[in-house]
Image (tube, rainbow, N blue to C red; front, side):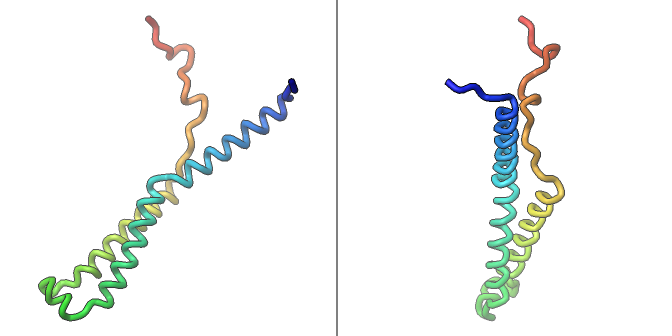
Length: 106
């Protein structure tokens, strides 16, 4: 049975915390929502720019694909900017456990 030094344990803990922080940023729901809305917004905007006169007349003269695409693109960009301005910080181990004076009494 091998013993681990304090240095090895600290290095492993630091590495795991770094991986956790990376995973928290990678799977932030704002990234998924923003990315999908931006992607679909670009597709809808292109569809709106390529719309025929018959399609526009069908929508009572409104290029609905263009306006919907621009709205989706703006919403997607909003989520991505929000993510950039307020990045996710993973919770610390200290925040998960209550302090001694905060523990409930029976």
